[in-house]
Length: 594
Image (cartoon, rainbow, N blue to C red; front, side, top):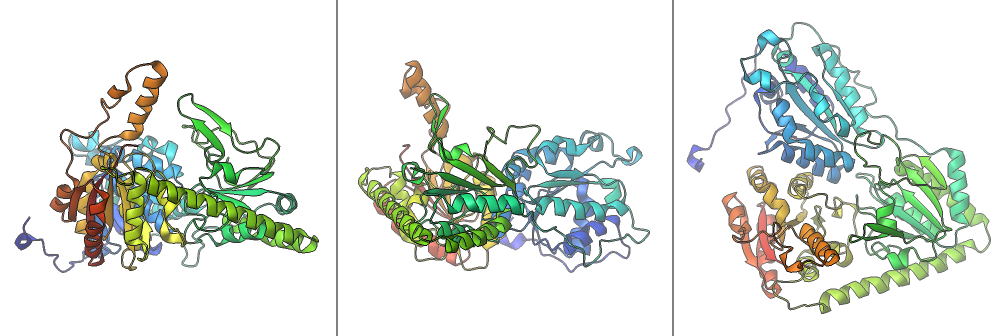
Protein backbone atom coordinates (compact mmCIF):
# COMPACT_ATOMS: atom_id res chain seq x y z
CA UNK A 1 0.00 0.00 0.00
CA UNK A 2 1.39 3.40 -0.98
CA UNK A 3 1.37 6.37 1.37
CA UNK A 4 -1.49 7.80 -0.69
CA UNK A 5 -3.49 4.64 -0.09
CA UNK A 6 -2.86 4.59 3.67
CA UNK A 7 -6.03 3.71 5.56
CA UNK A 8 -7.45 6.60 7.53
CA UNK A 9 -9.14 5.71 10.81
CA UNK A 10 -12.68 7.15 10.83
CA UNK A 11 -14.43 8.53 13.87
CA UNK A 12 -15.70 5.89 16.29
CA UNK A 13 -19.27 4.83 15.74
CA UNK A 14 -20.65 3.27 18.92
CA UNK A 15 -23.24 0.51 18.88
CA UNK A 16 -26.65 1.38 20.28
CA UNK A 17 -26.62 -1.93 22.15
CA UNK A 18 -24.20 -3.63 24.49
CA UNK A 19 -22.65 -6.98 23.62
CA UNK A 20 -21.30 -9.76 25.76
CA UNK A 21 -17.77 -9.24 24.43
CA UNK A 22 -17.95 -5.71 25.90
CA UNK A 23 -17.70 -7.31 29.35
CA UNK A 24 -14.29 -8.75 28.42
CA UNK A 25 -13.17 -5.27 27.38
CA UNK A 26 -14.40 -3.88 30.69
CA UNK A 27 -12.16 -6.38 32.47
CA UNK A 28 -9.18 -5.54 30.26
CA UNK A 29 -9.56 -1.89 31.23
CA UNK A 30 -10.22 -2.69 34.88
CA UNK A 31 -6.87 -4.49 35.11
CA UNK A 32 -4.91 -1.75 33.36
CA UNK A 33 -3.36 -3.63 30.46
CA UNK A 34 -1.32 -1.26 28.28
CA UNK A 35 -0.97 -3.19 25.01
CA UNK A 36 -2.52 -6.10 23.12
CA UNK A 37 -0.51 -8.12 20.59
CA UNK A 38 -2.53 -10.26 18.19
CA UNK A 39 -2.83 -12.04 14.91
CA UNK A 40 -6.39 -11.56 13.60
CA UNK A 41 -8.99 -14.28 13.40
CA UNK A 42 -12.75 -14.61 12.91
CA UNK A 43 -13.21 -16.64 16.08
CA UNK A 44 -12.83 -13.50 18.16
CA UNK A 45 -14.43 -11.04 15.76
CA UNK A 46 -16.93 -10.08 18.45
CA UNK A 47 -14.18 -9.30 20.94
CA UNK A 48 -12.17 -7.52 18.24
CA UNK A 49 -15.09 -5.20 17.45
CA UNK A 50 -15.61 -4.48 21.14
CA UNK A 51 -11.92 -3.66 21.61
CA UNK A 52 -11.85 -1.34 18.59
CA UNK A 53 -15.17 0.46 19.04
CA UNK A 54 -16.62 -0.03 22.51
CA UNK A 55 -13.10 0.11 24.03
CA UNK A 56 -11.87 2.73 21.52
CA UNK A 57 -8.70 0.71 20.86
CA UNK A 58 -7.45 1.49 24.36
CA UNK A 59 -5.30 -0.42 25.14
CA UNK A 60 -4.01 -0.30 21.57
CA UNK A 61 -3.85 -3.44 19.48
CA UNK A 62 -0.61 -4.37 17.71
CA UNK A 63 -0.93 -6.51 14.60
CA UNK A 64 1.65 -9.32 14.55
CA UNK A 65 2.39 -11.55 11.59
CA UNK A 66 2.48 -14.74 13.66
CA UNK A 67 0.89 -15.83 16.90
CA UNK A 68 4.24 -16.91 18.33
CA UNK A 69 5.55 -13.37 17.79
CA UNK A 70 2.50 -11.92 19.57
CA UNK A 71 3.23 -14.11 22.60
CA UNK A 72 6.95 -13.30 22.51
CA UNK A 73 6.36 -9.55 22.38
CA UNK A 74 4.24 -9.91 25.51
CA UNK A 75 7.03 -12.06 26.99
CA UNK A 76 9.70 -9.41 26.41
CA UNK A 77 7.40 -6.67 27.67
CA UNK A 78 6.82 -8.57 30.92
CA UNK A 79 10.55 -9.18 31.35
CA UNK A 80 11.38 -5.50 30.97
CA UNK A 81 8.46 -3.90 32.77
CA UNK A 82 7.31 -6.44 35.33
CA UNK A 83 3.80 -5.94 33.94
CA UNK A 84 1.71 -8.49 32.04
CA UNK A 85 0.57 -7.91 28.47
CA UNK A 86 -2.27 -9.48 26.49
CA UNK A 87 -1.66 -11.70 23.47
CA UNK A 88 -4.68 -12.88 21.45
CA UNK A 89 -4.55 -15.98 19.25
CA UNK A 90 -7.21 -17.19 16.83
CA UNK A 91 -9.14 -20.32 17.61
CA UNK A 92 -7.53 -23.74 17.51
CA UNK A 93 -5.29 -23.08 14.51
CA UNK A 94 -3.95 -19.79 15.87
CA UNK A 95 -3.37 -21.39 19.24
CA UNK A 96 -1.33 -24.15 17.60
CA UNK A 97 1.01 -21.53 16.10
CA UNK A 98 1.80 -20.16 19.55
CA UNK A 99 3.00 -23.08 21.73
CA UNK A 100 6.75 -22.55 21.38
CA UNK A 101 6.37 -18.96 22.53
CA UNK A 102 4.07 -20.03 25.36
CA UNK A 103 6.41 -22.81 26.46
CA UNK A 104 9.40 -20.48 26.73
CA UNK A 105 7.31 -17.92 28.62
CA UNK A 106 6.38 -20.70 31.03
CA UNK A 107 10.04 -21.68 31.49
CA UNK A 108 11.03 -18.04 31.88
CA UNK A 109 8.27 -17.27 34.42
CA UNK A 110 6.86 -14.49 32.24
CA UNK A 111 3.29 -13.39 33.09
CA UNK A 112 1.30 -13.26 29.84
CA UNK A 113 -2.49 -13.02 29.61
CA UNK A 114 -3.23 -15.11 26.51
CA UNK A 115 -6.74 -14.90 25.08
CA UNK A 116 -8.21 -17.23 22.53
CA UNK A 117 -11.57 -18.19 21.11
CA UNK A 118 -13.39 -21.23 19.82
CA UNK A 119 -16.65 -22.45 18.40
CA UNK A 120 -19.35 -21.36 18.50
CA UNK A 121 -19.72 -24.24 20.92
CA UNK A 122 -23.48 -24.20 20.19
CA UNK A 123 -23.29 -26.42 17.13
CA UNK A 124 -26.28 -25.02 15.17
CA UNK A 125 -24.52 -21.63 14.99
CA UNK A 126 -21.41 -23.03 13.31
CA UNK A 127 -20.63 -22.23 9.71
CA UNK A 128 -20.08 -25.30 7.52
CA UNK A 129 -16.55 -26.71 7.54
CA UNK A 130 -14.49 -23.82 8.93
CA UNK A 131 -16.09 -23.48 12.37
CA UNK A 132 -15.92 -27.23 12.78
CA UNK A 133 -12.25 -27.80 11.90
CA UNK A 134 -11.18 -24.76 13.92
CA UNK A 135 -12.86 -25.84 17.16
CA UNK A 136 -11.81 -28.30 19.83
CA UNK A 137 -13.82 -29.99 22.54
CA UNK A 138 -11.44 -28.67 25.21
CA UNK A 139 -9.23 -26.13 23.52
CA UNK A 140 -6.99 -25.37 26.50
CA UNK A 141 -5.81 -28.98 26.48
CA UNK A 142 -3.40 -28.09 23.66
CA UNK A 143 -1.25 -25.97 26.00
CA UNK A 144 -2.42 -27.02 29.47
CA UNK A 145 0.92 -28.57 30.37
CA UNK A 146 2.79 -25.26 30.11
CA UNK A 147 0.41 -22.57 31.30
CA UNK A 148 -0.31 -21.88 34.96
CA UNK A 149 -4.06 -22.04 34.43
CA UNK A 150 -6.63 -22.06 31.64
CA UNK A 151 -10.38 -21.53 31.54
CA UNK A 152 -13.22 -21.47 29.04
CA UNK A 153 -16.22 -19.76 30.69
CA UNK A 154 -19.55 -21.11 29.48
CA UNK A 155 -21.61 -18.01 30.31
CA UNK A 156 -20.92 -14.29 30.29
CA UNK A 157 -21.63 -14.16 34.03
CA UNK A 158 -18.62 -16.42 34.62
CA UNK A 159 -16.25 -14.25 32.59
CA UNK A 160 -15.33 -11.57 35.21
CA UNK A 161 -14.58 -14.10 37.94
CA UNK A 162 -12.49 -16.30 35.64
CA UNK A 163 -10.62 -13.23 34.38
CA UNK A 164 -9.87 -12.08 37.94
CA UNK A 165 -8.69 -15.53 38.99
CA UNK A 166 -6.51 -15.87 35.90
CA UNK A 167 -4.82 -12.53 36.63
CA UNK A 168 -4.08 -13.48 40.25
CA UNK A 169 -2.74 -16.90 39.27
CA UNK A 170 -0.58 -15.39 36.52
CA UNK A 171 1.02 -12.82 38.83
CA UNK A 172 1.45 -14.94 41.97
CA UNK A 173 4.33 -17.08 43.13
CA UNK A 174 6.22 -18.59 40.24
CA UNK A 175 4.71 -16.28 37.62
CA UNK A 176 3.77 -17.52 34.17
CA UNK A 177 1.31 -17.43 31.26
CA UNK A 178 -2.40 -18.20 31.52
CA UNK A 179 -4.94 -18.92 28.77
CA UNK A 180 -8.54 -17.70 28.61
CA UNK A 181 -10.72 -19.10 25.83
CA UNK A 182 -13.95 -17.33 24.85
CA UNK A 183 -16.74 -19.02 22.90
CA UNK A 184 -17.39 -17.13 19.64
CA UNK A 185 -21.13 -17.44 20.20
CA UNK A 186 -20.80 -16.05 23.72
CA UNK A 187 -18.84 -13.04 22.44
CA UNK A 188 -21.30 -12.18 19.66
CA UNK A 189 -24.49 -12.42 21.71
CA UNK A 190 -26.24 -9.25 22.82
CA UNK A 191 -25.94 -8.43 26.51
CA UNK A 192 -29.46 -8.54 27.97
CA UNK A 193 -28.73 -8.23 31.71
CA UNK A 194 -26.29 -6.70 34.16
CA UNK A 195 -23.20 -8.79 34.87
CA UNK A 196 -21.64 -8.70 38.33
CA UNK A 197 -18.09 -7.35 38.21
CA UNK A 198 -15.35 -7.77 40.82
CA UNK A 199 -15.48 -5.12 43.55
CA UNK A 200 -13.50 -1.99 42.72
CA UNK A 201 -11.43 -2.32 45.90
CA UNK A 202 -10.61 -6.01 45.61
CA UNK A 203 -6.98 -7.17 45.84
CA UNK A 204 -5.97 -8.18 42.32
CA UNK A 205 -2.82 -10.07 43.39
CA UNK A 206 -2.20 -11.53 46.86
CA UNK A 207 0.92 -10.58 48.80
CA UNK A 208 3.88 -12.74 47.89
CA UNK A 209 4.98 -15.67 50.04
CA UNK A 210 7.18 -14.92 53.04
CA UNK A 211 9.75 -17.36 54.41
CA UNK A 212 9.05 -19.37 57.53
CA UNK A 213 10.51 -17.31 60.43
CA UNK A 214 12.20 -20.29 62.09
CA UNK A 215 13.82 -21.40 58.84
CA UNK A 216 14.93 -17.85 58.14
CA UNK A 217 16.54 -17.60 61.58
CA UNK A 218 18.44 -20.84 60.95
CA UNK A 219 19.64 -19.60 57.57
CA UNK A 220 20.81 -16.36 59.16
CA UNK A 221 22.78 -18.32 61.79
CA UNK A 222 24.45 -20.43 59.10
CA UNK A 223 25.31 -17.51 56.82
CA UNK A 224 26.53 -15.24 59.61
CA UNK A 225 29.01 -17.92 60.69
CA UNK A 226 30.17 -18.73 57.13
CA UNK A 227 33.82 -18.20 56.17
CA UNK A 228 33.24 -18.02 52.39
CA UNK A 229 29.53 -17.65 51.49
CA UNK A 230 28.34 -17.49 47.87
CA UNK A 231 25.00 -16.22 46.54
CA UNK A 232 23.56 -17.67 43.33
CA UNK A 233 20.75 -15.44 42.02
CA UNK A 234 18.47 -16.61 39.21
CA UNK A 235 14.94 -15.10 39.23
CA UNK A 236 15.63 -13.09 42.37
CA UNK A 237 15.44 -9.56 40.98
CA UNK A 238 12.25 -9.33 38.96
CA UNK A 239 11.29 -5.86 37.74
CA UNK A 240 10.12 -3.46 39.01
CA UNK A 241 11.61 -4.62 42.33
CA UNK A 242 15.10 -4.38 40.87
CA UNK A 243 18.17 -5.74 42.48
CA UNK A 244 18.54 -3.68 45.64
CA UNK A 245 17.64 -6.58 47.94
CA UNK A 246 20.27 -8.85 46.34
CA UNK A 247 22.93 -6.12 46.49
CA UNK A 248 22.23 -5.32 50.14
CA UNK A 249 22.26 -9.00 51.12
CA UNK A 250 25.58 -9.61 49.33
CA UNK A 251 27.19 -6.50 50.81
CA UNK A 252 26.01 -7.39 54.31
CA UNK A 253 27.69 -10.81 54.00
CA UNK A 254 30.65 -9.88 51.82
CA UNK A 255 29.53 -12.80 49.67
CA UNK A 256 30.59 -13.52 46.12
CA UNK A 257 27.64 -13.43 43.72
CA UNK A 258 26.93 -15.55 40.65
CA UNK A 259 24.18 -13.98 38.55
CA UNK A 260 22.48 -16.63 36.39
CA UNK A 261 21.03 -13.83 34.21
CA UNK A 262 17.48 -15.12 33.92
CA UNK A 263 16.88 -11.58 35.09
CA UNK A 264 19.58 -9.01 35.77
CA UNK A 265 20.18 -9.60 39.48
CA UNK A 266 23.43 -7.79 40.24
CA UNK A 267 25.64 -4.98 38.86
CA UNK A 268 28.31 -6.43 36.58
CA UNK A 269 31.12 -4.21 37.91
CA UNK A 270 30.22 -4.59 41.58
CA UNK A 271 33.32 -5.90 43.39
CA UNK A 272 31.36 -8.89 44.70
CA UNK A 273 30.27 -10.04 41.23
CA UNK A 274 32.12 -13.21 40.23
CA UNK A 275 29.60 -14.41 37.64
CA UNK A 276 31.12 -16.59 34.91
CA UNK A 277 34.27 -17.05 37.04
CA UNK A 278 33.82 -20.60 38.28
CA UNK A 279 37.35 -20.89 39.62
CA UNK A 280 37.14 -17.74 41.71
CA UNK A 281 33.49 -17.76 42.74
CA UNK A 282 33.21 -21.19 44.37
CA UNK A 283 36.75 -21.69 45.66
CA UNK A 284 36.61 -22.60 49.37
CA UNK A 285 32.85 -21.88 49.48
CA UNK A 286 31.34 -23.27 52.68
CA UNK A 287 27.76 -21.95 52.30
CA UNK A 288 25.86 -21.48 49.02
CA UNK A 289 22.62 -19.49 49.10
CA UNK A 290 20.43 -19.93 46.00
CA UNK A 291 17.75 -17.32 45.33
CA UNK A 292 14.80 -18.48 43.23
CA UNK A 293 16.89 -20.83 41.12
CA UNK A 294 15.47 -22.84 38.23
CA UNK A 295 18.31 -25.36 37.74
CA UNK A 296 20.99 -25.45 40.42
CA UNK A 297 23.46 -27.41 38.26
CA UNK A 298 23.89 -24.98 35.38
CA UNK A 299 25.63 -22.19 37.36
CA UNK A 300 27.45 -24.48 39.81
CA UNK A 301 28.76 -27.33 37.64
CA UNK A 302 31.22 -27.69 34.76
CA UNK A 303 29.67 -29.43 31.78
CA UNK A 304 31.43 -31.56 29.18
CA UNK A 305 29.23 -31.53 26.09
CA UNK A 306 31.19 -34.38 24.51
CA UNK A 307 30.56 -36.86 27.34
CA UNK A 308 27.37 -35.31 28.77
CA UNK A 309 28.93 -35.27 32.23
CA UNK A 310 28.79 -32.58 34.91
CA UNK A 311 31.21 -31.92 37.76
CA UNK A 312 30.38 -29.67 40.69
CA UNK A 313 32.48 -26.57 41.27
CA UNK A 314 31.24 -26.33 44.86
CA UNK A 315 33.20 -28.10 47.64
CA UNK A 316 31.46 -31.29 48.79
CA UNK A 317 31.18 -30.17 52.40
CA UNK A 318 29.43 -26.87 51.59
CA UNK A 319 26.01 -26.17 53.08
CA UNK A 320 23.28 -25.31 50.57
CA UNK A 321 20.40 -22.96 51.46
CA UNK A 322 17.58 -22.53 48.96
CA UNK A 323 15.00 -19.73 48.99
CA UNK A 324 12.51 -19.61 46.15
CA UNK A 325 9.99 -21.75 44.29
CA UNK A 326 12.24 -24.69 43.37
CA UNK A 327 9.64 -27.47 43.65
CA UNK A 328 6.52 -25.31 43.46
CA UNK A 329 4.15 -25.79 40.50
CA UNK A 330 6.61 -28.04 38.69
CA UNK A 331 5.59 -29.52 35.35
CA UNK A 332 3.92 -32.91 35.23
CA UNK A 333 4.67 -33.11 31.51
CA UNK A 334 8.24 -31.93 30.86
CA UNK A 335 11.30 -32.36 33.06
CA UNK A 336 11.77 -28.62 33.41
CA UNK A 337 12.61 -29.14 37.09
CA UNK A 338 15.98 -30.72 36.19
CA UNK A 339 17.95 -32.94 38.58
CA UNK A 340 16.84 -33.08 42.25
CA UNK A 341 18.33 -30.32 44.37
CA UNK A 342 19.22 -31.69 47.80
CA UNK A 343 19.60 -28.48 49.76
CA UNK A 344 20.37 -28.67 53.47
CA UNK A 345 17.97 -25.82 54.24
CA UNK A 346 15.02 -24.81 52.10
CA UNK A 347 12.25 -22.24 52.16
CA UNK A 348 9.40 -21.69 49.72
CA UNK A 349 9.29 -17.92 49.56
CA UNK A 350 9.66 -14.95 47.25
CA UNK A 351 13.23 -13.58 47.52
CA UNK A 352 11.80 -10.09 47.00
CA UNK A 353 10.33 -10.38 50.51
CA UNK A 354 12.66 -12.98 52.04
CA UNK A 355 16.00 -11.39 51.15
CA UNK A 356 15.39 -8.09 53.03
CA UNK A 357 14.16 -10.05 56.07
CA UNK A 358 17.26 -12.26 55.95
CA UNK A 359 19.50 -9.21 55.61
CA UNK A 360 17.94 -7.66 58.72
CA UNK A 361 18.62 -10.84 60.72
CA UNK A 362 22.20 -11.00 59.44
CA UNK A 363 22.92 -7.41 60.42
CA UNK A 364 21.74 -8.16 63.95
CA UNK A 365 24.01 -11.20 64.24
CA UNK A 366 27.03 -9.48 62.72
CA UNK A 367 26.66 -6.52 65.07
CA UNK A 368 26.41 -8.87 68.05
CA UNK A 369 29.51 -10.94 67.16
CA UNK A 370 32.88 -9.34 68.01
CA UNK A 371 35.27 -9.29 65.07
CA UNK A 372 32.69 -10.47 62.53
CA UNK A 373 32.40 -7.13 60.73
CA UNK A 374 36.16 -7.07 60.25
CA UNK A 375 36.12 -10.60 58.82
CA UNK A 376 33.43 -9.59 56.35
CA UNK A 377 35.37 -6.46 55.32
CA UNK A 378 38.45 -8.59 54.64
CA UNK A 379 36.38 -11.11 52.67
CA UNK A 380 34.83 -8.31 50.63
CA UNK A 381 38.30 -7.02 49.79
CA UNK A 382 39.49 -10.46 48.68
CA UNK A 383 36.44 -11.07 46.46
CA UNK A 384 36.83 -7.56 45.01
CA UNK A 385 40.46 -8.25 44.14
CA UNK A 386 39.46 -11.40 42.26
CA UNK A 387 36.67 -9.49 40.52
CA UNK A 388 39.13 -6.87 39.23
CA UNK A 389 41.57 -9.56 38.08
CA UNK A 390 39.06 -11.56 36.09
CA UNK A 391 37.55 -8.47 34.45
CA UNK A 392 41.04 -7.39 33.39
CA UNK A 393 41.76 -10.87 32.03
CA UNK A 394 38.58 -10.82 29.92
CA UNK A 395 39.39 -7.39 28.49
CA UNK A 396 42.94 -8.47 27.67
CA UNK A 397 41.66 -11.63 25.98
CA UNK A 398 39.18 -9.67 23.89
CA UNK A 399 41.85 -7.23 22.69
CA UNK A 400 44.60 -9.74 22.03
CA UNK A 401 42.80 -12.73 20.51
CA UNK A 402 42.73 -12.15 16.71
CA UNK A 403 41.84 -8.47 17.13
CA UNK A 404 42.28 -7.75 13.42
CA UNK A 405 40.58 -10.90 12.17
CA UNK A 406 38.20 -10.62 9.21
CA UNK A 407 35.39 -11.52 9.76
CA UNK A 408 35.60 -9.93 13.20
CA UNK A 409 35.75 -11.91 16.44
CA UNK A 410 32.76 -11.99 18.75
CA UNK A 411 34.65 -10.29 21.65
CA UNK A 412 35.69 -7.45 19.35
CA UNK A 413 32.11 -7.01 18.18
CA UNK A 414 31.05 -6.76 21.83
CA UNK A 415 33.71 -4.11 22.50
CA UNK A 416 32.90 -2.08 19.38
CA UNK A 417 29.20 -1.97 20.25
CA UNK A 418 30.01 -1.09 23.86
CA UNK A 419 32.25 1.79 22.79
CA UNK A 420 29.41 3.15 20.63
CA UNK A 421 26.66 2.93 23.29
CA UNK A 422 28.40 3.33 26.67
CA UNK A 423 27.60 7.04 26.94
CA UNK A 424 23.92 6.46 26.10
CA UNK A 425 21.14 5.36 28.45
CA UNK A 426 21.15 1.90 26.92
CA UNK A 427 19.22 -1.36 27.32
CA UNK A 428 20.27 -4.80 26.07
CA UNK A 429 17.28 -6.89 25.09
CA UNK A 430 18.33 -10.52 25.37
CA UNK A 431 21.36 -12.19 23.76
CA UNK A 432 24.83 -11.40 25.13
CA UNK A 433 27.18 -12.70 22.40
CA UNK A 434 27.96 -15.84 24.37
CA UNK A 435 28.35 -13.69 27.49
CA UNK A 436 31.01 -11.40 26.02
CA UNK A 437 28.70 -8.42 26.55
CA UNK A 438 28.32 -9.44 30.19
CA UNK A 439 32.10 -9.71 30.56
CA UNK A 440 32.92 -6.40 28.90
CA UNK A 441 29.96 -4.03 29.43
CA UNK A 442 28.97 -2.20 32.59
CA UNK A 443 25.47 -3.33 33.62
CA UNK A 444 25.00 -0.66 36.25
CA UNK A 445 21.21 -0.28 36.42
CA UNK A 446 18.47 -2.90 36.91
CA UNK A 447 16.82 -2.15 33.56
CA UNK A 448 19.98 -2.59 31.49
CA UNK A 449 19.14 -6.17 30.56
CA UNK A 450 15.89 -8.09 30.18
CA UNK A 451 17.54 -11.45 30.83
CA UNK A 452 19.52 -14.06 28.95
CA UNK A 453 18.71 -15.41 25.52
CA UNK A 454 16.45 -18.45 25.25
CA UNK A 455 16.04 -20.96 22.41
CA UNK A 456 16.45 -20.22 18.72
CA UNK A 457 13.35 -18.58 17.30
CA UNK A 458 12.68 -16.49 20.42
CA UNK A 459 15.04 -13.51 20.50
CA UNK A 460 13.61 -11.09 17.94
CA UNK A 461 10.07 -11.37 19.37
CA UNK A 462 11.22 -10.95 22.97
CA UNK A 463 13.47 -8.05 21.90
CA UNK A 464 10.52 -6.25 20.32
CA UNK A 465 8.65 -6.59 23.62
CA UNK A 466 11.59 -5.20 25.59
CA UNK A 467 11.86 -2.27 23.17
CA UNK A 468 8.11 -1.63 23.47
CA UNK A 469 8.42 -1.49 27.28
CA UNK A 470 11.15 1.16 26.99
CA UNK A 471 9.57 3.18 24.18
CA UNK A 472 9.29 6.86 25.02
CA UNK A 473 11.82 6.74 27.88
CA UNK A 474 14.78 8.11 25.92
CA UNK A 475 16.72 4.84 26.11
CA UNK A 476 18.73 3.21 23.35
CA UNK A 477 17.48 -0.38 23.09
CA UNK A 478 20.04 -2.76 21.56
CA UNK A 479 19.44 -6.28 20.27
CA UNK A 480 22.55 -8.39 19.57
CA UNK A 481 20.59 -10.50 17.13
CA UNK A 482 21.68 -13.99 15.98
CA UNK A 483 21.17 -14.61 12.27
CA UNK A 484 19.58 -18.04 12.64
CA UNK A 485 17.05 -16.67 15.12
CA UNK A 486 15.99 -13.84 12.81
CA UNK A 487 15.56 -16.26 9.91
CA UNK A 488 12.76 -17.93 11.90
CA UNK A 489 10.78 -14.71 12.25
CA UNK A 490 12.12 -12.19 9.74
CA UNK A 491 8.66 -10.73 9.13
CA UNK A 492 8.60 -9.48 12.71
CA UNK A 493 10.80 -6.56 11.65
CA UNK A 494 7.70 -5.03 10.07
CA UNK A 495 6.05 -4.72 13.49
CA UNK A 496 8.74 -2.36 14.82
CA UNK A 497 8.39 -0.10 11.79
CA UNK A 498 4.59 -0.07 11.80
CA UNK A 499 4.28 0.74 15.49
CA UNK A 500 7.31 3.03 15.65
CA UNK A 501 9.28 0.98 18.15
CA UNK A 502 12.82 2.40 17.96
CA UNK A 503 15.62 -0.10 18.53
CA UNK A 504 19.08 -0.94 17.23
CA UNK A 505 19.73 -4.43 15.93
CA UNK A 506 23.38 -5.41 15.57
CA UNK A 507 23.46 -8.73 13.77
CA UNK A 508 25.53 -11.49 15.34
CA UNK A 509 25.85 -13.09 11.93
CA UNK A 510 28.12 -16.11 11.57
CA UNK A 511 26.03 -17.39 8.65
CA UNK A 512 25.23 -20.60 10.45
CA UNK A 513 23.24 -22.36 13.09
CA UNK A 514 26.63 -22.66 14.74
CA UNK A 515 25.58 -24.03 18.12
CA UNK A 516 24.46 -27.21 16.37
CA UNK A 517 27.42 -27.08 13.99
CA UNK A 518 29.69 -27.15 17.04
CA UNK A 519 27.84 -30.21 18.36
CA UNK A 520 28.53 -31.96 15.04
CA UNK A 521 32.22 -31.08 15.36
CA UNK A 522 32.18 -32.70 18.82
CA UNK A 523 30.52 -35.81 17.36
CA UNK A 524 33.08 -35.99 14.55
CA UNK A 525 35.97 -35.80 17.00
CA UNK A 526 34.41 -38.41 19.28
CA UNK A 527 33.74 -40.80 16.42
CA UNK A 528 36.79 -40.14 14.27
CA UNK A 529 34.79 -38.79 11.34
CA UNK A 530 35.62 -35.68 9.29
CA UNK A 531 34.85 -32.42 11.19
CA UNK A 532 35.06 -30.46 7.93
CA UNK A 533 31.71 -31.98 6.98
CA UNK A 534 30.02 -30.75 10.18
CA UNK A 535 28.60 -27.72 8.34
CA UNK A 536 26.24 -29.83 6.24
CA UNK A 537 22.68 -28.95 7.22
CA UNK A 538 23.97 -26.13 9.45
CA UNK A 539 25.23 -23.25 7.31
CA UNK A 540 23.22 -20.16 6.31
CA UNK A 541 25.09 -19.25 3.16
CA UNK A 542 24.90 -19.84 -0.58
CA UNK A 543 22.90 -17.60 -0.81
CA UNK A 544 23.86 -15.36 2.07
CA UNK A 545 20.82 -13.67 3.65
CA UNK A 546 21.04 -9.89 3.17
CA UNK A 547 19.67 -8.64 6.47
CA UNK A 548 20.27 -4.94 5.78
CA UNK A 549 18.22 -5.10 2.58
CA UNK A 550 15.58 -7.16 4.36
CA UNK A 551 15.38 -4.52 7.10
CA UNK A 552 15.05 -1.67 4.61
CA UNK A 553 12.25 -3.52 2.84
CA UNK A 554 10.37 -3.53 6.18
CA UNK A 555 10.79 0.19 6.81
CA UNK A 556 14.03 0.07 8.82
CA UNK A 557 17.33 1.85 8.36
CA UNK A 558 19.84 -0.83 7.33
CA UNK A 559 23.60 -1.11 6.74
CA UNK A 560 25.95 -3.98 6.01
CA UNK A 561 27.14 -6.63 5.79
CA UNK A 562 30.32 -5.49 7.57
CA UNK A 563 33.14 -8.00 8.09
CA UNK A 564 36.00 -5.68 9.07
CA UNK A 565 35.53 -4.28 12.57
CA UNK A 566 37.57 -1.19 11.61
CA UNK A 567 34.58 -0.14 9.50
CA UNK A 568 31.95 -0.82 12.14
CA UNK A 569 31.94 2.25 14.39
CA UNK A 570 30.81 4.80 11.76
CA UNK A 571 27.96 2.50 10.76
CA UNK A 572 26.90 2.10 14.39
CA UNK A 573 26.96 5.88 14.89
CA UNK A 574 24.75 6.42 11.83
CA UNK A 575 22.33 3.72 12.98
CA UNK A 576 22.16 5.11 16.53
CA UNK A 577 21.30 8.53 15.13
CA UNK A 578 18.38 6.97 13.25
CA UNK A 579 17.15 5.27 16.43
CA UNK A 580 17.31 8.55 18.31
CA UNK A 581 14.99 9.96 15.66
CA UNK A 582 12.48 7.20 16.43
CA UNK A 583 13.31 4.74 13.64
CA UNK A 584 14.45 1.14 14.03
CA UNK A 585 17.88 0.46 12.56
CA UNK A 586 19.87 -2.68 11.73
CA UNK A 587 23.61 -3.09 11.18
CA UNK A 588 24.60 -6.46 9.75
CA UNK A 589 27.97 -7.60 11.15
CA UNK A 590 29.72 -10.80 10.10
CA UNK A 591 31.63 -12.66 12.81
CA UNK A 592 33.96 -15.59 13.21
CA UNK A 593 32.23 -18.88 13.94
CA UNK A 594 34.33 -19.49 17.07
